[in-house]
Image (cartoon, rainbow, N blue to C red; front, side, top):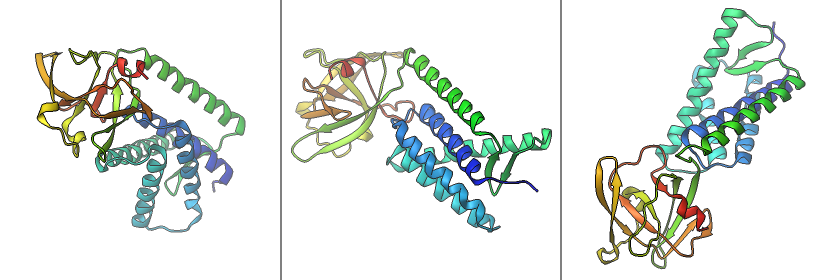
Length: 268
């Protein structure tokens, strides 16, 4: 008969949830604060107290797992459209399932003491010192990954962009910083934020305000239509000189459907 300590169960799952949320944040390039990930991890660790409820129904357990996943993802990453939210939830559940399979396989092959899964919750009987050391190591690995990735050509930092057109039209979307994007409007030299057309629904753009901007792609030379919004904010900071919003007819790879060059952030 295995002995289960609730304080160890909560601490271990807090650690696991935090690492999982950080991994998803990095993979999907989500603009989420680390403190929100911590709050979500605390909530997730407290939901492990489910093991105290003697319910054997697989259906109820599945509903509980789905409900807790929805709240964890919502706390960690905030609101977004249905498609993005579904992807985030499915990825969290998939990685959790993979981790459970790994722990189960280790149990079957090596039968370590103090490591098991109870009511779909992972339990590892570790000392506080081991947990602290593991946390420090994980933090160092994540920090190193972030520093190394920031040196790559494609900087995966995500910014929140809010544009205003007219007196009562405002839309907000996420844009990824791409150091290889140096597109600008030829006459004013103002930078251009490339954005998929679907993100600009609700913006009334008259044809006389559109500019034709030539751009170079892998396939050759192309043109895009762009407009200058009345106001624009990047992460809540006003971009006083302004910029142009390029309407991209093609799909942009990845979860974020807009990209900007470093000229935008340098102007903040």
